[in-house]
Amino acid sequence: MVGDSLKITRLADPRPVKLTLQLPADVWRDLELYAALPSEPGKEKIPLSNLAGDMIARFMADDFAFLRRKKKAHSD
Image 1 (cartoon, rainbow, N blue to C red):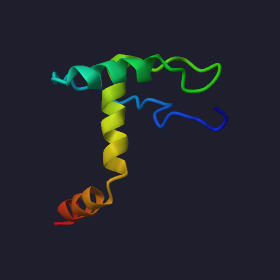
Image 2 (image 1 turned 135 degrees about the horizontal axis):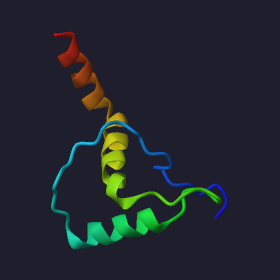
Image 3 (image 1 turned 45 degrees about the vertical axis):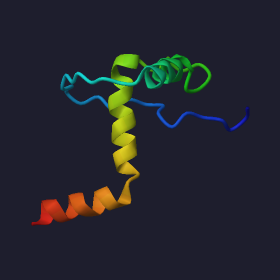
Image 4 (image 1 turned 90 degrees about the vertical axis):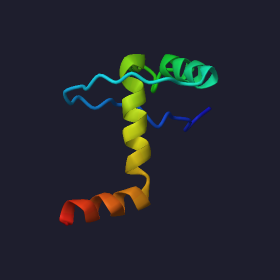
């Protein structure tokens, strides 16, 4: 489909922090599928090991209530 692009196309490169989490099986299967889909023609596939962190970061960056509270917490 033309104009059909994934939201996560470029991974951040900060020092990683290891995290263990449990996901429902259907979420895990979808995460594997998401990582297997190329983000853009000619681009590298997204590494599954880093994908969840970037998805969480994207989610929080789009949550305006969280951003307001984060800004307030940093200004106090």
